Amino acid sequence: MSGDWSSLSLPEPVRAAYAALRLNVESGQLAHGYVIAAPNPAWGMLLAKLLLQQLFCEAEAAKRPCGECRGCQLIETQRHPDTVWLEPEMKSRVIGIDPIREANHFLRQTAFEGGWKSAIFMHADRMNEAAANAFLKTLEEPPPQVLLMLITESPQALLPTIISRCRMVSLAGGGGAARESTVVERAMLDWLRRRGPDTSPMEQSAWISALLREVRERAEAKEDEADDDEDVEKDVIKARVQSKVVAARVEVLRTIVHWERDVLACLAGGGEDGLFFPGEVKTLMSQSREIGLADQLRRIERVEQARVLLERNAPEQAVWEAVLPA
Image (tube, rainbow, N blue to C red; front, side):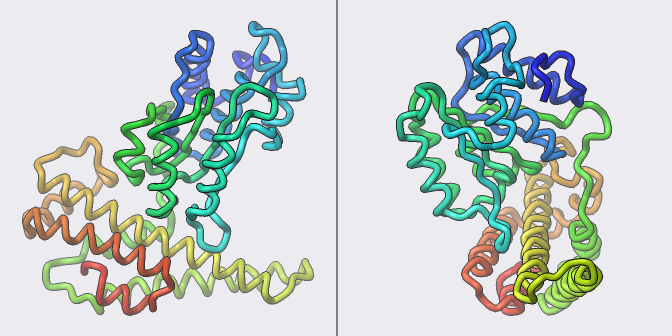
């Protein structure tokens, strides 16, 4: 990463966001927490590294970040002793409470190099409920000279209490930056569009089960192709496949809860602005006219209940049929 940030070949949204954050650093007005809404997670990581290099660079102030000193290099390789990087666990695809507790403890210790300490959360919206609540305690009473950055494609999925205690930085500008929907999301949207008041839970369960089965079959086929080129143990291959299935399951639940929240927004009289799926506004409005406010709030609660049960390894089919709203 080059030292002179102004000469970097940066995406324009990253360049603009960094320019503003750099002014915050230079004026002593840096917040303790930032939510970086990044349709492209790589942009979020790039912005986080630039800001951290600005803080940890050993060059004179006018030349920071130099990109060449020990501090800049340690940030670039994610090895700086006063910075911790957190991301979802490979198998569960969620950020659990144990890493958050470890990060909270780390942030309250004296900095190794006597300055800032920082924590960067990749895919921050994947913190489970316990992890989010544990993180909230640090966010409410942050130690001095601690910087927290939450990078996410779905800032709306974070707890409102977390968002309210952070400054929002959006990298959604620059044209063409809108998040590209996944195969799983598109399949679920196809189902949610056709879902009606008479749809049975078993119909929805069959759709989700078929979708996840297809994800597994494709992952297994891909691993079979790769197995010809590398000697990989069967347990490793099995773990890789299961990781993809779990990630797809998380995406199924995320799509459903975003859809239900959009229905709620339409029910409350909101417009397209702020919807997760603004292109689906006609269908969302139609569905909102078929349900009352209290019932829609209960639907959202049931999706959250389903997520908790699946994290506790409850039988999937029972969750799809008995818990999720059809």
